[in-house]
Amino acid sequence: MVRLIFGLLILGACCSFTAHANEAAEAAIKAAYNDIHQRFLAGDVGDVGSDFYTEDALFFPPMGGKIDSTEGITQSFAGMLEHGLVLKPVPVEIEVYGDVAYERGIGYLSNQQGELLSKDDYMVIWKKEEGQWKIYRDLVRGTPPPAN
Image (cartoon, rainbow, N blue to C red; front, side, top):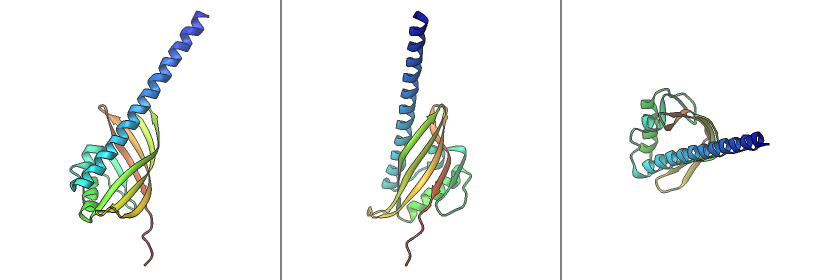
């Protein structure tokens, strides 16, 4: 009986630790997206590639292609900003598995006046590196432009 109670206590502690780790990962991911959005609002994305993506990250932008460097990712985000675009990623689902997380969300792309231009689905794989969650794979499913 003592073994059973001890085993249940250990199991409960492990589940509590896992739930806390998942909550911490979700909070870190949401904070990263808030930071990216604030950079767009401030008009300077900084070094978004190195700040939020792993060195070996791959970014698949909405209308095709593949970007395989943090410098290229930063240039892509800076290009959006230069065209007057503001990105706001919003996580819908986050699943954490140790030092890796899967996330599905919606990216809202608007102009500087706040007018919504597109709403794109995305999927991201995050990796925890040196205590920081960074994007390892970023795949955006673009919305076709409106017909003229």
